[in-house]
Length: 122
Image (cartoon, rainbow, N blue to C red):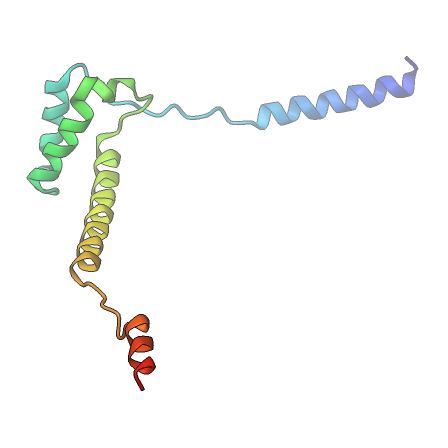
């Protein structure tokens, strides 16, 4: 390796070292320490006045089944409840739309086969 190549490599290494120094380490997300389902229920008590009781029971039933919440990498209750609420609103809207569509049956204005038979009599 000649001197020119060495200086080029040396400059590149210095640039890489400088870039590495500027890189900030990722902040670790604080995970709430939840040991068992009782602690999960106790922490949800705070949100009982914000969300409906039926939504909270559905949420607890879902996440406590088979200790689902323990399998998650991060389990932030407030964010999970907010998302659950948004999804519940979406599900309720879709359910109501399906009901409206099902309840209003569209009847055809005329029957083509019947009209053909009527014209054949003339």
